[in-house]
Image (cartoon, rainbow, N blue to C red; front, top):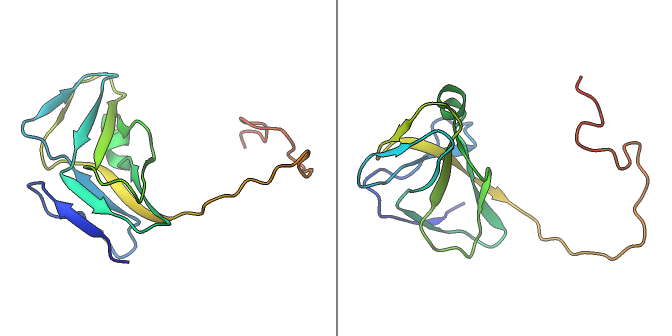
Amino acid sequence: MKIKIINKSNHDLPHYETIASAGMDLRANISESRILKPLERSIVGTGLFIELPVGIEAQVRPRSGLAAKQGITVLNAPGTIDADYRGEIGVILVNLSNENFTINSGERIAQLVIAKHERAEWVDSIELSDTDRGEGGFGSTGVR
């Protein structure tokens, strides 16, 4: 699939690191380093603008290493970029650690996954079919 992109950043285009990678790393594109204090959140620009085909979305997801090692994650994960959005891709980062985190320009801060999606059409109904699970949710099937 070919997707139009405008790169106003100072960095290379996102790319897949391996043949089996689902996501491409997004890099911070900021004029100066920024400190993210514990429990603080910030929208970090990437300098990237894309034009997706209808039926395709881009998902902004956390980087597992950054989350596990530093406690930095994407607040609204996954963030959705719709096909009709033409603004800059921004990443809402949050610091869930107890330490300040410095964001530097060019740092890999999130990953972008391109995915197909469906559009639903609601069908009014007075009842839903029965299942073994029924209305059980939020851990109702156990921990193991």
